[in-house]
Length: 459
Image 1: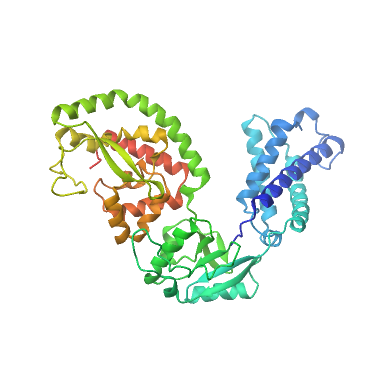
Image 2: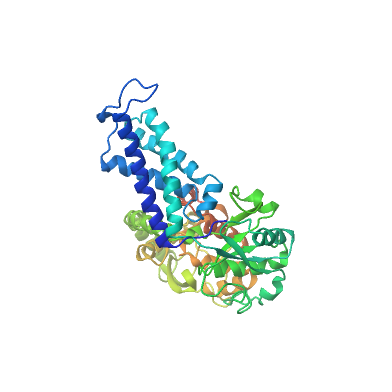
């Protein structure tokens, strides 16, 4: 496990790490320039390795900060970091990163400097972190265990025995029935006040879900919803199926594997990244699509009476409704007598032009304007109509989790599934995107979307 440190503490550690890394590198270079070393032919010429602040010392600092982050040294107590050799690993990674930076700049780092830099950096990092532990201790993180099986017992025992550095057992709730609330659309799946009674007052905690019982899945969904508010950090003790189906587990509680639950697609970094893509790529797509919008709108208007564009109420981020625009693909008044109805393959209500637009997903082009306005994103869960959302949320409680993201013109469910894929199946793709987002996943979705448009496999 790793307790999350305060922002101020993290910034102080990062500033200190950068400074001591530059000091260690400068000291090693100075020694090589001034002091003859065994097994070396001569002193290091000054032009061989520059100590200019930019870009070389900035490169040293950057390499060290990235390495320390990758080694997970910013959230654990100093004792825990030392136990697993985190600072030595960071020093080795930093040296490797430094070689890469110099190589990309067309320079080489002398081997003697590298060999001396690793132990020097390790030493100054150890000394600095010992001082930092006195100045800004990370403290003890309370942990709440949920579940009554053998894994929960092991986790509770490890915390009670003091084996987990920086953590203590705050509460252990074996019977999860007390946390469960009846399923109702728009309401919490957790019984009011039940979880709050287990959490410490006025502080954050780690909640470890350690139940494999199917009837406890609603409690897990409720925990996922609550964790989005950052009241606590949620961890799961994975079962065999979870281990096989997900990425390698690199965290533990004692000897138990532990998986952090992170809504990566809802993180500030992900939102900033997607907004930048929306503005740059979205602007280009709007300009390119204007002739097609005019052509398709005219074709729809000529084939059947009525406005060429359709406006519908949809549910967006956090459940806020908005007006979505599409090129009309069905006959006017197609839902008279039936009410809101999901489209199906070979839907008789679809016009000939509309059928082509649906196959290529080009009926979604007007939504590019909503992307530029910030209501939607190029990539995200497809928005549904309020009537359907209410039904889906009752039938599939986890459906509400997808509402933490902006709706998208395309998404993982759209490029992997069919147009009429069932909502519970689409939800699995949407949640996969929510919890395992990366920029590379966005690139994959965009490329698959282009392939869908070109191949006309939208239905």
